[in-house]
Length: 107
Image 1 (cartoon, rainbow, N blue to C red):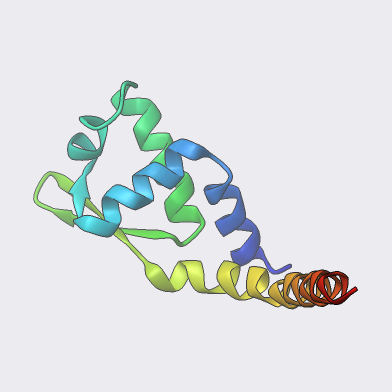
Image 2 (tube, one colour; image 1 turned 135 degrees about the vertical axis):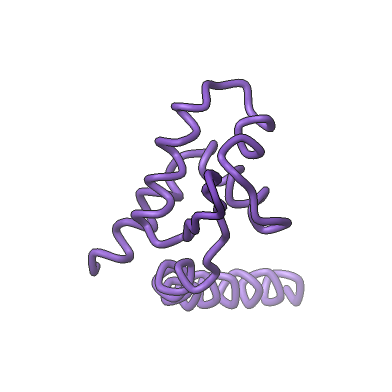
């Protein structure tokens, strides 16, 4: 696994960071706006945002004194492609299960 994927998976491993991504999928937000949606300190949210940025799942731009956080969908692409590789195994298992069920119904 390449470093970008590792960073993305590290970022996605935490449920709070996944929730932050959901919020950012709806709108770009400042640290304060993200913090308002959680029962934790602004400092803790900042640490989560830093990990998301390191994982290339968000980008940050400055606007005056504010830092605006934005979802980077392409950051999810490498992780998604890696996970999609394993879909074939599920597909094979589900086809085998369907066949077994259908064959059992015939008997």
